[in-house]
Image 1: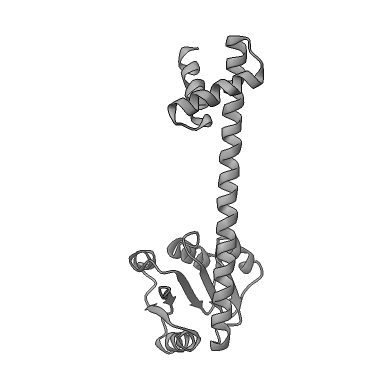
Image 2: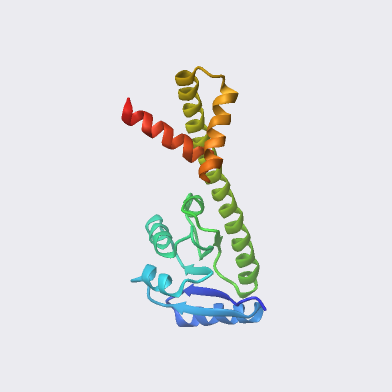
Length: 194
């Protein structure tokens, strides 16, 4: 059986919090915690380590969004922000801040589950994109250092590029290391000697 999805609800008003909790309980079997006090929000969320954070704010400002972003850790988990009204540009600011969902016109029980599902899906998609971007950047950096090392070997040994790469690859295999790590060591050593 899959573990229950843990959800933290940030809502200072007890009646609104109860409506949200009831809507979630009607929608599924979740581990739900309510945080009523925003002071120390980051610490409270860090202690609970929820799978998802749902925040209900009547009238947000850029400062509120920035504060909530820092506190809720939207790069660590999906965060859905429900607002009663929004000024121009706030939804873009919320998305740029990493929030997974920004829902205007308040929180109604019927909207809670679909919005949370969408927030989780968007978070997972963004997480995949961040991972792919990091892997691509690393591969590019690896490629650069390998090319530098090949160039150094080609000049030092007067060998063609294919032979230089084969030498790097053989050294990496002999040492049980990645080619990029061997190339980095060569470039670093040459920098120290040069």
